[in-house]
Image 1 (cartoon, rainbow, N blue to C red):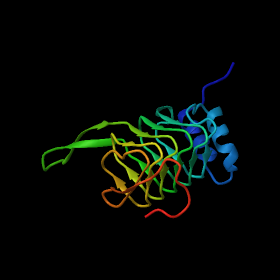
Image 2 (cartoon, rainbow, N blue to C red):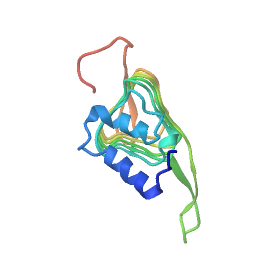
Image 3 (tube, helix red, strand yellow):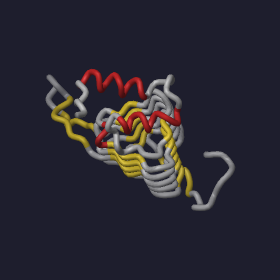
Length: 174
């Protein structure tokens, strides 16, 4: 009979699975054995944080770079999505309260990233956002509104810079 792992032991194993000691090709497999079912066929950098692993689904062929952060969720990344280092997917938000406590009651809204999208290093995606398939979000952008498919966005807040052809490749962003 398989005994359930205690919470602190489980957290330690999740942390160990995401460490640089575990080869990148084995991280998702190890996390799956610990019960994280939404990351089959995904390459994970070290230090990736899943606040609620059961609410994150990442499509096959995707790559999540070092120290990416996934809030409580729900968060859905399509197939072949690339996530840069230290990207953040923040699903929680608060209403505005009185001056004694401005952060009032909170709620979570899901984030969706379409197939083939590229989320650059240090990008912050805020609650309720959809990033369209094939889009590129430039490094350091803060995504505050939905992004159309096959488009380049950058800046704070992220703004559309240009359209991409679905078959376009080569060159640089910007």
